Length: 277
Image 1 (cartoon, rainbow, N blue to C red):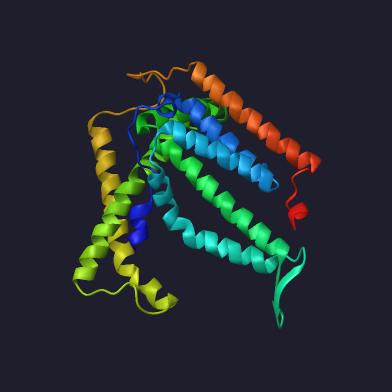
Image 2 (cartoon, rainbow, N blue to C red):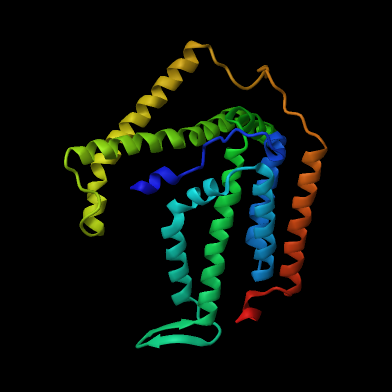
């Protein structure tokens, strides 16, 4: 249950860095391109370049590295499951270990490591978006990027607002869940012992009050917005307009070059993971 305290998505870490000063629209675009580049990468060399790029961005953001590592704790079990799944399901390369019908190939180990590494890079770089962008800037950036879809009837402002509120309430709900766990533990509840089914059943006393609290917070927020005559969308003015500069265009250009490099490596097959078996 302590892993709940390690979630960093939705939290803003105020600092004076070049990444914090970037336009939210460009940061969202760069994150989107990075994710595509990450799924385009085809081998260890490509993943190494993407890892170096992520480390460079983290260094520029001045976010303590321990904060990023803290955010990886909740997905350690997912990384382990991914590694085991690919290790036993991929039948390429040479046999490393075999017992009865079970066998592990070198290709399964390599592919499992790469998929786990992909998850680490994915969460590390995406968590920087909320760590370096205020909720207001994030909402405005999403609204601007979704505005072309208004012609198709998409409520850009409402959708951006819902996505931002959802991200903003992640730390709040985690804090609420932690309080409920401590309260239930003080009353004698046991969340650690027993098998998988027993632990799943023990979550019910946590989930029920957590959902009730979430609905109550949502209702209070809706009433507060209505009481303040909040009307989003058309004719809505902003106290701070998003402004782009040279650093934004430079960052986006570098990200596009990284994506093109990943695409070139994949098309040419120069860095195929099978070649490392």
